[in-house]
Image (cartoon, rainbow, N blue to C red):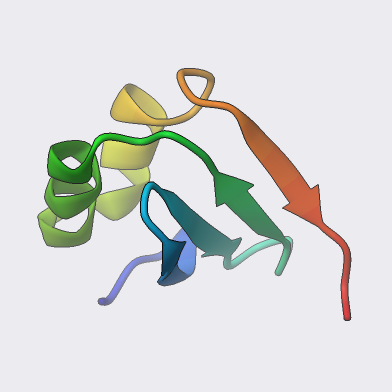
Length: 67
């Protein structure tokens, strides 16, 4: 999953998943993202662009504090 902005994606339990960002290193959990949107995100050639266009500011999310 090479990306310059998204370090890692992980499904917690559907329809929730986590995104780790390269620059900040922060993890955010996103809720209620439709399975087809998540699948398209995972398969997107430019994940940062897909995230900005289809997920950011469209779904509920929360910052997960460092463990």
